[in-house]
Length: 448
Ligand SMILES: Cc1cc2nc3c(=O)[nH]c(=O)nc-3n(C[C@H](O)[C@H](O)[C@H](O)COP(=O)(O)OP(=O)(O)OC[C@H]3O[C@@H](n4cnc5c(N)ncnc54)[C@H](O)[C@@H]3O)c2cc1C
Image (cartoon, rainbow, N blue to C red; front, side, top):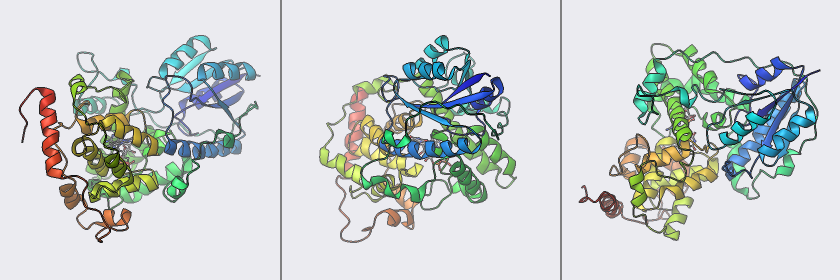
């Protein structure tokens, strides 16, 4: 009797899981392992909201595996040590995993050399980052040619079916509750009203989007209506793959929804582009991708300003609504993320890394590619970034995208009452200061 080991990481699903399929094909029985690794220096420890999600997602996949005869082995510790231990314990003759693309891939590369028949698979991106390059063989730094080059290639492969039976392998396992992933604070108490972590929840979201959101996707910038998919945390934890999303959208797209489908798939493309950046810059949550920003004269964060931003009490209503949405639901609408990030960086003069760290801790979809890439996009320090001098005006953004105040009234109880505070800073004065700082960085006179 032979045994495979499949090591799950950011692919907490049974359907369209190439590593799982390979493990089942290669041996009579399959040990399924998840390792909580907070110790390896290459792993960025998960934030609070992600830990909440992970707890529930692991619980779901544990049940889903049990239902087809498998078990989930939970272990905690540095992967370099834990994975070989479990391989030896279950007597695995081959080891399978789906690739990851950040700094932790160093761990995988080392293990690949030392483990028996270790094989990696492409499961969470449509294309491995090293396979998408410019004509000169260099990484893309601009999204449009990157996406065009992907669209010019073959269609993504079809999703793989979920296994209907597995011969599981028993091994000692931690109890999920002993990992203490759920926060002590009542902070996440409303998360279950918004989210159903796990593969079934991901599918339900996708179906809801195909039925209702897709036809409205051209209104994706309006935070008051539900026109986007809400798939980001499911994609982040790999409860659904981009292949499943791609083919589901293609299968329902009609001439009327074609433009929306293309636009939606290009947003999935931005996720790919973020991972492309991460692959080539694994320290991008710490380092400006454009080195001239290393000389930027960031203010020392004013603790009152920073607290007001985090709590959503800045008196700038679109920013406050977004920050309160984030605190209560673990997410924030994309347009509002841009405005809230711009306000922190440009109006409060605070280094983008401070905001990135807060989002890392509080977003359920916090991911080590899209979060720093998006913060650097807003700051102007990233690839294909918005120029620093383009400062979002939160009031104009609100008038344009939330004209009836539906979104702001939803998240700010005291909106439009005398209890709502005055802005903590003047938008025009701080904008002028931001432009002067930017000019100083470049050794220029300020732009108006
Ligand atoms: C400051 C800031 C921080 C962000 N941090 C994250 C993060 O940590 N994790 C994350 O997944 N997204 C992040 N985003 C991108 C974007 O806001 C979210 O992906 C989007 O709001 C998720 O909602 P949705 O699933 O309804 O998106 P949809 O519009 O339905 O898009 C479909 C999918 O495409 C991907 N996607 C959409 N927009 C982007 C984008 N701009 N960049 C990269 N991928 C995108 C997501 O996987 C998303 O689920 C950030 C954006 C900003 C401005």
